[in-house]
Length: 225
Image 1 (tube, rainbow, N blue to C red):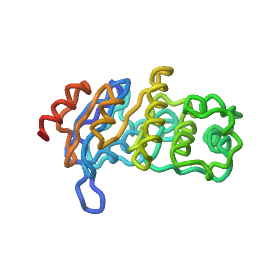
Image 2: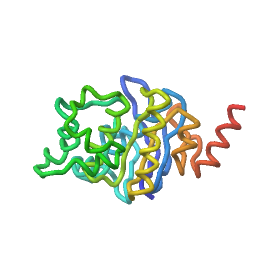
Image 3: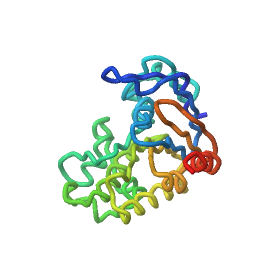
Image 4: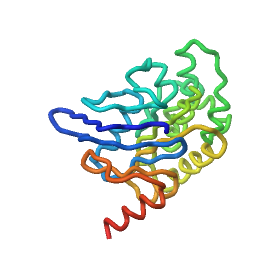
């Protein structure tokens, strides 16, 4: 099992966000699915220690994430945020950002290609790209760290239908061509159906159910019918 969360609680500003959440996320393509405000993004942030639980445990490959070096963990389990947050400069500057911080020389073309952008983008100003292109640069920047896991927080929520389809196609190709696992947060039933192999349904800070995507989403559909 890739991640296991056991009786996790977390509060923010006096409000209980997670309340005894327990679930598993296997290797492959997993999805945290539920309505806005249900605790999905908070759960995602626990996985690379952007936050720590008030109580309970978050286990990554058999050990508590709090026992791991946080910087090493975040190079292995990499977050791609909901909105693009690019540094000033070119696409190449952005893709090479992480390796350069670690003092490594780096060729950004391979992760850029994995993210669905060709080498003609390398020297383009990052702030002049479309939002969909910027989101794929963010994905390439994450891939430059050679992660084992990508954490994707509503990666298409700010995109139109065409850009959403392009990002989803990129994620499907990435899963087909690499061994990287994905944990996706989405409130979209259809997106969860398209991209996930395993679904954890979350609402009001608790996991309602988990299982293979077809079963979990069928149960969700029955619950809303």
